[in-house]
Length: 111
Image 1 (tube, one colour):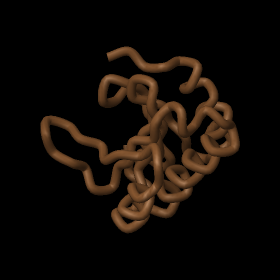
Image 2 (image 1 turned 135 degrees about the horizontal axis):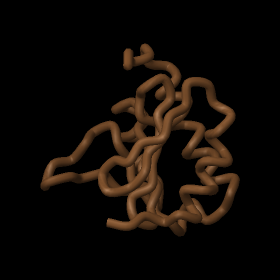
Image 3 (image 1 turned 180 degrees about the vertical axis):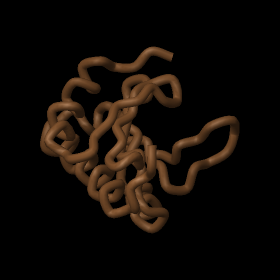
Image 4 (image 1 turned 60 degrees about the vertical axis):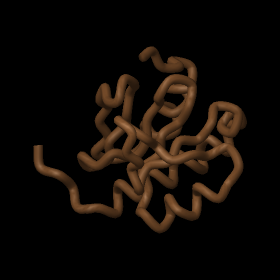
């Protein structure tokens, strides 16, 4: 699956100042990790954000979001945000920062 490189570039510009940032190919797209914990990524034309299970449940009440599913299973802490929802830079930054803040709040993973 190809991913939206323009969206990836916009995300990178937002998340790049974070400490302990790495970039990785995941789920057929690209993802950014903070301290080894996934923050967000691009899947096709959409944004994927990892949050706490509670924050993800709340995020799924917002328009333009849906659960992340892989092989017929829902990932409780992942939210897919539609491309139209993150067309605005401020809205994209809100989602990217939410994922990055959550990832930074977790213990760093060892390499």
